[in-house]
Length: 165
Ligand code: HEM
Image (tube, rainbow, N blue to C red; front, side):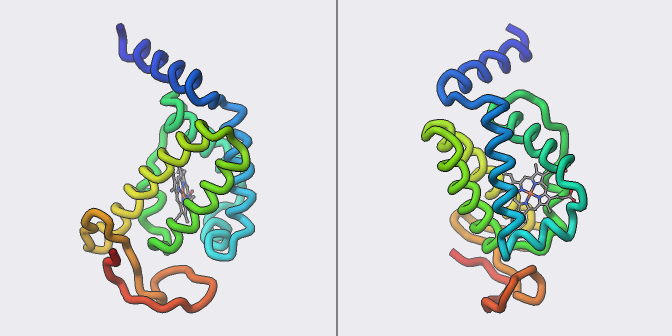
């Protein structure tokens, strides 16, 4: 079996088990970013960088198709895009909360669980990468927290650049 055939087989298995298809991905992406754009913590971080949302949403559909269905549709470098962002564990927690809410609203339970598992994995690796760029090697269970003057926050919440368990 070729690598392409193996990938097609894995995709077919995920589709059969979860019911995820491109239409469900499009609904999830639309609903999630509608919430993100309204969010006091995350909205401004995106507004600063995304002028035209249509290409971003198309990229995010391709990304989720690649991650959730192993379709190979996305060709990009998310880590590079996230390293310069003024974010820390607070933003990742909020991102995941909104994503999980949306997945449960938009998808059947098995599909939601699959998306959420993938999202947690990618979020963790992005947070590890961002911490690493600041010279902090996060150990298992540790989180990346920056001083507030170095991070976008809608209001003052306190904190130093540190690891937190
Ligand atoms: C702290 C939470 C997050 C924030 C504030 C954030 C913000 C952003 C922003 C502003 C961009 C556009 C960057 C640009 O075009 O210059 C972006 C792109 C992207 N984000 Fe995030 N993000 C977060 C978490 C995540 C997570 C957890 C994932 C995956 C599960 C993710 C996946 C992506 C992808 C795939 C892109 C497109 C990269 C490309 O252009 O190819 N993000 N994000």
